[in-house]
Image (cartoon, rainbow, N blue to C red; front, side, top):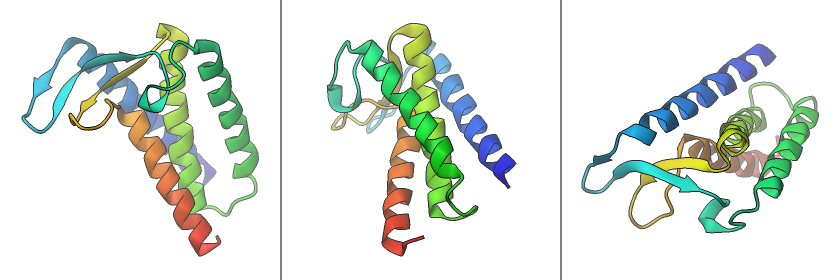
Length: 137
């Protein structure tokens, strides 16, 4: 079952990277949603702008903690899937930071900072962590 963890994480990372590549060269205005290329040199909500080294080191630490914690959780529960989504989201944005110096964002709702698939994966992870803590898995 651990192989499922890595396969799903890998597929999310691939989807994240493919969408980032696509929207570097294409944009769409769908009234309530704009899909366009934005360079994000900071973290969420624009914090830590131009702190590239820090924004590379923190995700690396998170990845190590995920692998450490993964041994402690039961397979196929909320915490398991939370770690899966967190790993995928963390690696997806880390790839951008290492290779480009910024994270590619492209989903623009107009009222929220522009984000990407890796960010969605991290939010899903956060929700699953909260559910896991409430259920005390």
